[in-house]
Length: 179
Image (spheres, rainbow, N blue to C red):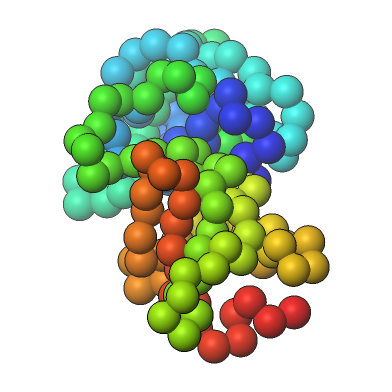
């Protein structure tokens, strides 16, 4: 889970690659330069403090959403294995410029969640967290009972995103919001 708005999770270290400290990365980003352009990145295990590393090099596996990268100071398989399941982070202010109709997932935090009920739009909660490790899920805190529900972030359910007016409209399957 993203607990701090200062960080953006862009990938997960899935395993070591070879014997020279290279790492297999599952990308959670649409921007491949996050794994191919050298520079500072951070890794984080669970909710511990992020640890800085310098990305030396990286390339995308042909036909895959995964990358092979090298961090400065990680020189053998054992060191690489120690980073398995760590998240790769970038600072949230280090985000590429987007088109008007595009957004970054962390921009959904704190947006009101609205629902179309019998032709009336009603606020039902607020986006309070994101889960991006395996699927993109938004965590909504419901106004009626303060309970949190997980909503798959797919266009069939999250039908409208209005960054300017700070809300999303959802069309969840029957029972998804009933707790």
